[in-house]
Image (tube, rainbow, N blue to C red; front, side, top):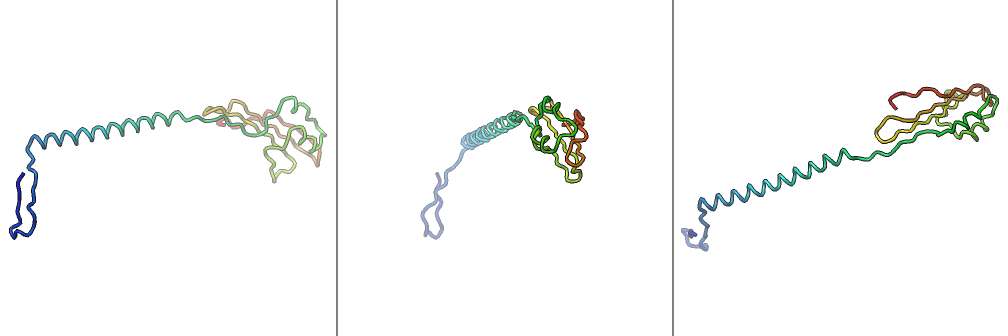
Length: 143
């Protein structure tokens, strides 16, 4: 260690350590090793997050009115709106522009796959009675 003095002599001597080349090399190795450890741990964490993001569970999605075929078969021309509502439930689509039509739509999508079960039934009314039942209509294929 070398001591440096203030020329005026008013302050205490300042001592500064003298670093040799081997000391500098050892310090450089320590900092390089520490930064490599930090980089490695960061890489491991990011890789784990990336791999885990592909394993997200997606629940089955069931939308609409699930109608039993035997209930649909009971619908006949001449039934009232109340009877249809009792038999099939509230319609999925109650269109304000078409008061004389009720649509019952149902589809089931399991996971990320497309819908495996689709059904669309339209019931037309004249005044308060069923005039026509259209079943097994095609839904969009991308559902």
